[in-house]
Image (tube, rainbow, N blue to C red; front, side, top):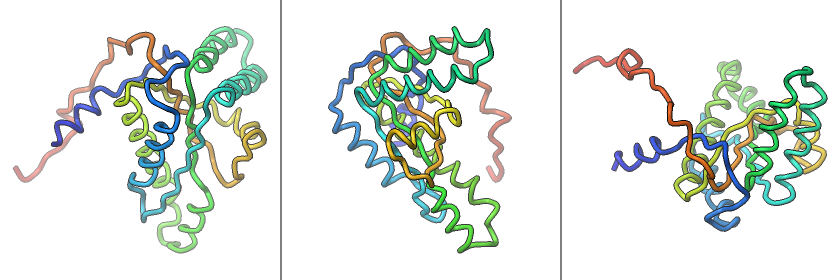
Length: 201
């Protein structure tokens, strides 16, 4: 059984070339996201991760906003390359905005003061697990995904546009669509030996 799970991990890759098509219905994307966010583990069962799923015009509006925000802070020579990347993200099918609810983290810090300094780090772990699970699940359905981090430039505009609660902190953007090109074939690996220590065998 573990081999099936490991196979899904191995086939999950980063796809940058995506088109605005999906092999599954939008409601299936939403269903998968809800299953992921319900069943992904979290420290002290905090369940602090939040998703905002954007399709269609809302997806494209996000990346139009990102272009405006990044252009405003871009150093002169960087903009052409950044604009190309942002247009590529816009050409995809949808985006999942990945958030952590700071209200939950603060409540845990107050309840368990002894571990207060650790809760922000543990929240990052929770968000990463949710992101990985969602990414892998969508790719099992035939979608391709890539993970972006255009925060903090776009954070406030998103709050204003989609009425996202102020307590939610943006961690990343998972872009998805139908792949039009394979992932990078030259991915390299640091050998597991030296990265995994074993005792007791």
